[in-house]
Image (cartoon, rainbow, N blue to C red):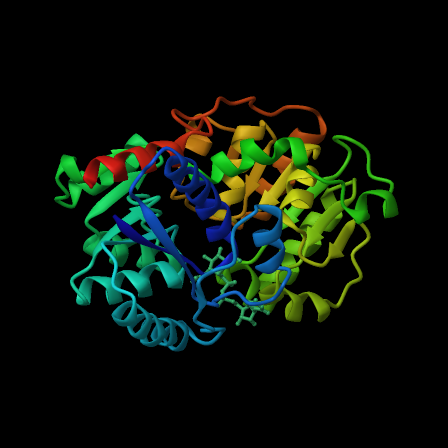
Length: 361
Ligand code: UD1
């Protein structure tokens, strides 16, 4: 079976790395799965792409479509035009997409219109928040995909509720967690550690890049001010390129918030693992903190990853500044739930996916 794997943006890379490793391991045992890796070029900065390929030992993509940035429609359209050309030249049995970025949806639409089957890794999760571009990507992808590799039973139910038959849904666990568990032995102390004399459990990590938190300058400034006023310990903030423009225009100079360039995967996980807590609006970070047992304060009103709240260390703070201050006070006083690891988030999801693909042959 020939598969085409799609990756476009930073959170995709941790999800495809273990799938490629599992395919390569199976091919040593005479598996008949071969793959071609397509990078859409949605993320192109070395710090958002190249460094992840190096650290996660992902082979060079077979092609980079060079789609780049733009409005939602511009970016999606560019990926579609380029991927259509590529797929016509390189037909495949199955296109495998991961996650919920624009590349995920764009390549799914193209593949289905060329009568090619699609498997969605991380299918079925829902925030039900239609203001998130990712929710639209998830819904459109899942409306078209043929097979679903899911991270939770809730995701299975979401799919079944939209009419997907059970034989197309495979609950396999979480490939992002495969990457996390494999790489824990390799994590690297980032430069900011020494520079700011960080100590275990005596600092926080902040990541913010959702349009709803960072594109509205007033809201962004209010959030940064509130965090800076109530943190009481250094808050290491690797600033996403999308967030940088507004960070550079803040009218106050934060005392506790320490901005840095985006970190590599191994550096970021080092920082998260040893932090007192993490403040974030990322989806993946909610999952990583749950598995690492690190408190997570999510600055969103909903999550497509509810198990990180019901079982894990995650708490939804929304944009309620008082709730944020209370949560930071609880964290300081050591009052936080401990949490458990969700079912099948055990580092073997990619292996399960490849076994299932082999059975489809
Ligand atoms: C995208 C995903 C989001 C994911 C995030 C992780 C969508 C809709 N969003 O959001 O789900 O959580 O990636 O980072 O797919 N930019 C650079 N260099 C780059 C890439 C982007 O400077 O290599 C800047 C550009 O100004 C660009 C902006 O970041 O316009 C946003 O990039 P884009 O890929 O559109 O979305 P993200 O916010 O990164």
